[in-house]
Length: 341
Image (cartoon, rainbow, N blue to C red):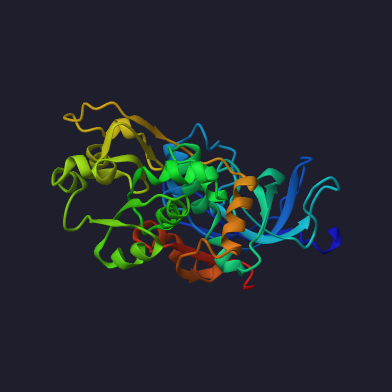
């Protein structure tokens, strides 16, 4: 098997962390050097909004010695794995890796065994690449960091009853993370899911499971709450938009509630007139094959659906990243790498 692995590969590089300009280059194929390293041939990846600025925003996470290959979502085929690994050559896998290592906009990549999961059997490579980072962020935002009980996803009656009593608000509900979060909240038994969306995405998020809409072009979150504060305050906000949406979310979360953001530190956006006591946090997801295994089962059972905005060929990498950053995609933007479907 090793003799069939090339020494060079095509990869997208970000030469300057101060610029979003990307280039296609030829670099060496990575060589596994840890006992949990798995070499994977990449078929598709998906850009993540904001990732081209991570080295500036979070230098404590992104070291200066990182090879600047972007792309955090992997769908691919295992090429080689340690003899002790639960994965073997030929396995179809998917993953989200730690951001301090080279990303997946390349023909080959090293993943850690703990990050990998077997891909859903009912999805192709393009659909699989739309899942890892967004599904994991939605799951961990609601359950690991948020106030929902994950046992409800396995049918636990007490957990379903507990979740049914909570009101959840999700900003950026039609986006990559938000569209997964709406579905996961629905599957966890939440009856009151408030989605913050644009005009064109009202029906889209309603079909995903949202029960109420705040159309941000018509009304702010704060104004919506003021119309009936006692009825409209929520137990949990999952912020997937940041900016003004995060600031306005403080008006929606009830005293004693929880505000979780995947974008920035909520306290930095707290309006001066909001005095309530709220558990607030910004979190970075933990790559987890075990969490993805749960997602896999739900996808294969048709309980969760993948939402794709657009698909680009590998030589259209610049367009794919630009669409992700500025195009307000509905669901995920996919970059095909190998050409396989």
